[in-house]
Length: 188
Image (cartoon, rainbow, N blue to C red; front, side, top):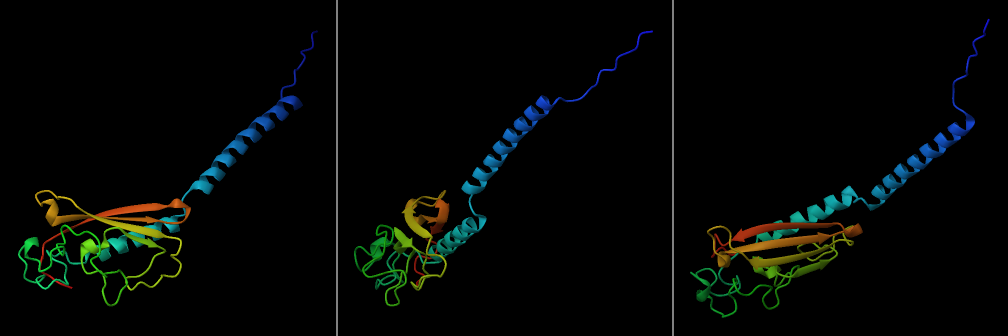
């Protein structure tokens, strides 16, 4: 009689060690990718704060009047066009940027028109009164105001407002808004 020889089945020690090494290398690669992703990802709180700052600045600018003349001009309340300004150069369609001593945060001569905000640069965020806001020193903001037509509205009657905020870890948020001259004689 022939005795059947049963072969043992299983994994040898060498095969088991090779398996452990292969799985270990794969797990190490996955962990390294996750670590890199976590290290380079944006902190959601920083992004949310930068967005809140950009929204607040955009709203501040959009709420300013967009008159034919600077609101300090004697004819600002009655001018029917930019030619009606009492002082040449007070034309708000051509004079982008603050006029004279106008400054954001100034009590005596604050920004009083949308175009005053052109090229505003904040290193550390301040309130409209010029006071630094605690905890926002690591954020910077710039505002640009340019003429840009909006559909059937000509460029002289519409302004594109762009607010860019940069925060820690180079988080950048850019918001655009438009302001049209719908009430050219409304003064602050």
